[in-house]
Image (cartoon, rainbow, N blue to C red; front, top):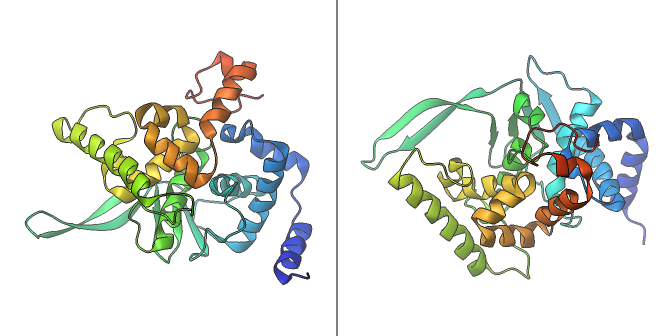
Length: 280
């Protein structure tokens, strides 16, 4: 059956081809894509083109992006959607705003006595409900390895969370998932982190303590770890890892372990060292 959507998709891809050499440079800068199969990488390549055509990148003074940098951002944005089907998971926003570095953002909170405080916080990224996603390019450029840090995935996890409304740590789960199992795993780990930090605010938690800020940040941080530090997340909170594995329908830990068994470059270094291109 003739489909306007499929026709438009094919036309967009035909008009915006990604040269092989350019795509290879992008792959070399993103170790977290190592170990993906040819079909997965082909899907990701097309998804990058469609993402960049669908979203408007607004660059602020001090930021100029070439084709390689745009694809670098898009590939990280699309990795979480790799096995989620053709649904419009990144709906409800059309703009990515990119600062050169961390930026000041007005913040407010109400303390336990009901007094509201306002201040300017320094952020490297933000995701606004029914609004844009904001990145510091320095953070985007530092993402893409196995260092348990990925600004792009973190902020876009918030957008997945917001598909149900305000971010609360509960994205729309698949029909084969149970909310009770999700809540048990997430709440248990969230409470564990907060117990540790209440006992010692300076303690070294197994994952970034920012995850203990609220349930929305817990989901964003653990999504970030799921793709960029899966071994650390699984060791700390295996039940959380299993829920994210069900949600994203991926298993980055198995892929990383396979690389560590089969790829000499991964046998020579710790996966969490800052290796620009372990395959090269």
